[in-house]
Length: 340
Ligand SMILES: [Zn+2]
Ligand SMILES: [Zn+2]
Image 1 (tube, rainbow, N blue to C red):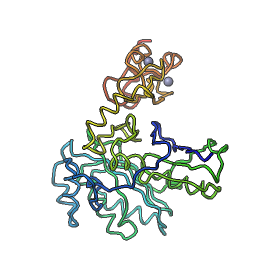
Image 2 (tube, rainbow, N blue to C red; image 1 turned 120 degrees about the horizontal axis):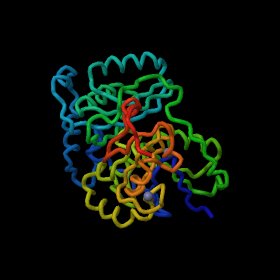
Image 3 (cartoon, rainbow, N blue to C red; image 1 turned 45 degrees about the vertical axis):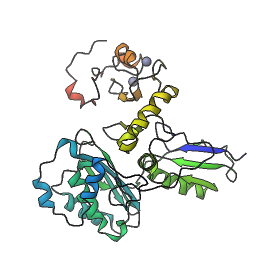
């Protein structure tokens, strides 16, 4: 009776929270750019300091452009806000004008219902856009989430445009059997936006006891560390996934210990079901499959980077990717001979 039903909105790796406790109240840490510092522990990571240092109100786009960005100074920024935008095309034009000349790649979608942005860039460029946005009263208190990009841009290019729906539709019939009045439902997603959308829909359908994780798992990892979290967090950009320590440097040691102790419980090879040592997704070598999966080193070699034996004989196969690389466009591989 009335147990928890933990409902993930398509987040590939799962969060296991204690069965009867809600997450502790959120404390915004210094890392959370632009927000008041209410951290219980003194923030000390380099990125925190940089965030705060660049939080000054005055910025100058030309000055920003003069500075040559370091490859390790790239960040990924996420924010969204549901607010009525009377003229989305005018809003888009304003944003495009501001971003002209700034080195920003990513997905920024705007419509009458608001804005949803995920982008990467040198930290100065990335935060200049945030500062500019916050000068608008509609966005002045927006929750901005940042994480390190490690290796330059996490998105191939900038897509800033009108989109009829700010989040992708997800059909779920998992809740059909659930008692709408008695069951407590905890929803979570990566950055919070999908829970905002779908909790509204579920409330309209009569669900009474809905809880959502504010700011999503990324905000949870930032404020709480890897408490009760196993594995990495999927990121929906070229980084694929990040360890909890990327969101909260203080918990790095704690995180690696948790991971060692409990990763065998869930991180299985998609092909042979053995435990994987590297929590890193890869795309199937068959371009026409491109399935994203976890795979052990043995199966990577045995199946030539494919997800199954069928894909091994597909016409558009690519070579096994070494290390943490991503596949490039098909023409790069088209004329290469791949051993069957
Ligand atoms: Zn395997
Ligand atoms: Zn495949």
